[in-house]
Image (cartoon, rainbow, N blue to C red; front, side, top):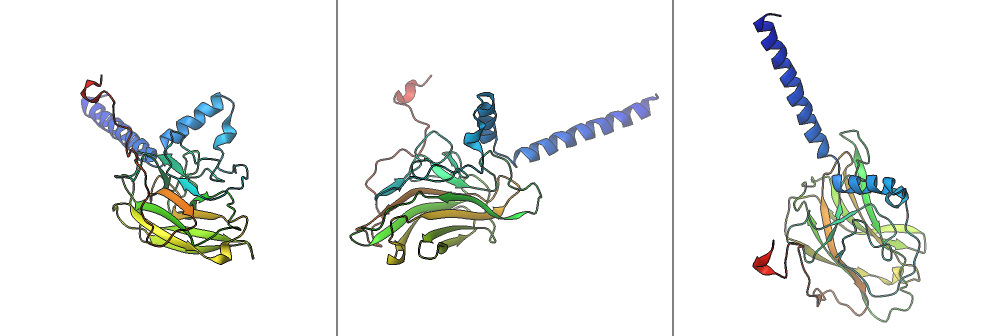
Length: 258
């Protein structure tokens, strides 16, 4: 092999190698490595079913008040409050959240892989459904409040993407859309107050959040926090008496951290 041919062969080898690494890097953006690692760990422990995206939590009947600030270390929703495990509970994706921990909606399933590997696939992605809540004996106005943020430290949801809130109407077994927001760039968390009318006052009221997004990657992020449902509220009831951490980067030793 002459010197010119050797240089040409080396060039194409390096080009192929660099391109391969670039493709690997891009692929990593399409998954959630934290969830995948936990799923692989569960397989080793012979308990993979806790991560299956088809899994539904056991049905539990709740009473008011309903409150979740997602301040937990476990990456999946609290099974005592929620029926499914599609969203990712974390403190990394939001920017200046109201409290430590949010529920993040994206285009990945509960294991951390895309719902659909086709690059242009689009549709309903993550869903977060409450356990049934008894509203048959409420005494006054019922409101559901929450705070939300698009993108955060993640990927901007496009204008065709959306985050939605639906109530379950028991009378005709229908999910009714009561609130929605189209995709936009990141902004501070915003508070939403939604009135729960008498049509929904029954012994098994449910609500759910869902996002519509590109289904092929870790994209189109929305984050929600402080989901609070109770009676004796008004539309002006926007404050919660809560002293909360918003990050896990703290130390009781102040500057003595090792």
